[in-house]
Length: 411
Image (cartoon, rainbow, N blue to C red; front, side):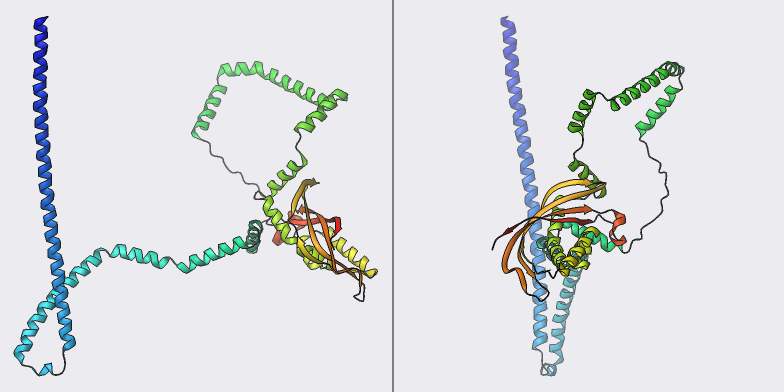
């Protein structure tokens, strides 16, 4: 044991000595590398400084010579032409030196500019293409559109209406068969199914299972038919309960129909469009302006307006209303009228109530009689065959029914 411990102590001492030696050698090598790198960096910086100083001195001398040359040219007068030929020869030598230096400087500048010409040309081209006025104009138009009260839906409709004038509507109804592309996995699955169908084991199983499947389908159809045509009160109550729970509501049906006809339909945009048409419609309805009503109303509303107008005129009653304020339009209900979606909108107005006779005398109300009138409108989504051809390219809403729900006197 003592010998083994002595051997271990000797091995430990040897390891300590070796590690110390290797560490010293590594430190020395690292120091040498660092000193060498520092020396090379100093040499490189010195060379760069010398080159930069030489270049700056050369440029300064060339500019100084050029300035002296230009000053001598400016100070020249008709009297200098009378000097001797010797003086002019000495000046010509100095000018030739200055000219050579200026020429070399010009060559250097031209070479640098030619090397940088692609970058400069690209930058100038971008600056030329970038028109600040166009961007400013576009920004102003966007800002003006945001501040305006017209909705985005109306803008889309106007854009479609503008483009519809140049597009011809096709009347062809031919069917075209378009091949569908299958994926690699789908093709492999089809090949596998075809291969399995041709196997004799599959044919045997199919012979036994096919009659069973047919009988099961017949039994399921009979049970369904008996369930639907049953007169049992319990069965009828269960059917009514099932329909009341799982049947689609009228609102959901109407919205589904609207989405099918107009995938980009938005209820806030619709309310904004109705809000804009309230004042012109009410003004035209009270005055009997059929031309304006044709833009917003259906035939039923126009015929009703004509009939009421003729009836009041025959009795010498003429309305002189004036709208002062219109509240925000509120969507209250959506439902189906046959196959046509209907949206009920409610709002209220504050208006001057005034009725005159044939001579213009006030018979009821007056210019100081203000009333709050509550309205309910029924807006109908028109079919493409019920509107003019130029408006059939996009969904069109028309006023189908107008009703005064109530009147409240303010003054």
